[in-house]
Amino acid sequence: MAKVFDICHAGRVTYSEAIQFLYGLNLFGAHFGLENTLRLAANIGNPQTQLRFIHVAGTNGKGSTCAMLESIYRAAGLRVGLFTSPHLVSFRERIQVNRQLISEDDIVRLVTEIRAANQERETTLFEFATVMALKYFAEQKCDLVIWETGLGGRLDATNIVTPLASVITNIALDHTQWLGDTLEKIAAEKAGIIKPGAPVVTAATEPEVLAVIEKMARAKGAAVTVVGQAPRLSSLCLQEKYFPDGWNWTGETPVPLCLLGDHQKLNAALALATVEVLQPQIPVGEDQIRAGLKNADWPGRLQLIQKPDGQKILLDGAHNLAGAAALRAALAKDFAGVRPVLIFGALADKDWAGICHLLAPLASKIFTVPVASGRTADAGELAKVFQAANPNATVVAMNHLSHALAASQNDPFAAITGSLYLIGEALERLGVLPSDGGERGLNEWTPKK
Image (cartoon, rainbow, N blue to C red; front, side, top):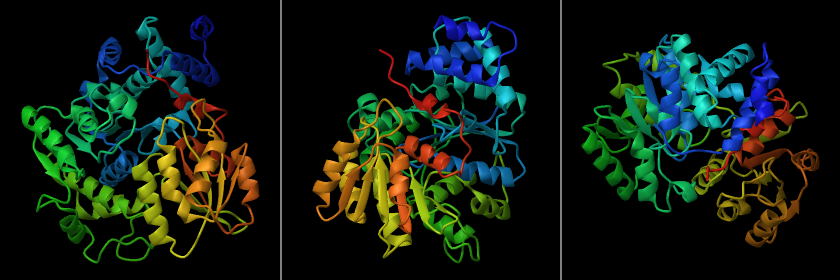
């Protein structure tokens, strides 16, 4: 580590050197606990006390819900910070103000300043990035910060804030080796973001999950709104209020929701319910809400692009069973009658076999690829499971995503899915997002021993 730390001792630091310093922090893995983040934030003056937050946790839909909330409040004229992870291509995606990525110069400055404040203490990348974001958002005088958890909630570095509201999208089995092997255990970790007196809004539906959330909320004196259950804030009521002619995905009147997939309707309803609950603190007009949902953007989640040669490519980071089920439903409804070429890669610590079984019937041609990660699932093993699940499909294991893209270039429709790491690489290779020079590797982490 000495070489990495020495870089930041020597005068003017370049952006490349700052990124290399952040790579060095990855060696410390992921530490689940708040002590380091609280200490580091205190060393720079506790910037979180100058800010207002909406804290968002959950298994799936966190990013989309955050994007909708950010877009709504920005449409209302607020200066809105957005903190999310992982990034698809550039580390700068994680810290945005009014959807403008933090600049390279600000990354360099914050790395230098916070490294000095850290006093050579062992700190993980996510802890460091969390404090970078807090300091930046305070400097930028953000009116509101949409604040996404990294992993879990209770012991996640983001949980040092006291939010205006705590949002829990849903609970499904994911990261079970760290969060627990039952829905109740995972719910307890996610519900750890609930704070005294701060309202809770959730789209979770399972009785055992809601029981955990409601029990914790009662203990904290926090009111709970369950989207789809509470009469005033059900998804149907919200739809009728803001979209009296129904949700619209075609870009035609009355107002389109730009994010594809029926599951985004629930995410939109969750965002709307949160805005409703917070109206006394942050009033937002109905026209501003409609405009915010119309313009919400979240790359890599059912993102449809069309190449100059006419080929359509759908990119979706369906990295767990619930995400794969949402992708399957979207393909059946929004692309009915079209069988895409499927390009799939996953991380080995996910339930990739279950995902393969869900997606296999959707395609007659499937290419499996490795993900650019030390945690990648083997493409050959993926291919075996796909072939067993769909014996009539042509299934080929490829050595690289570029080979799969080349092999599918004459097919009219391709779907690239699985790990968000793979989606980021695809967005680079397809020229949708500029290359970062290797910053996707900053998403790599392992639990601290």
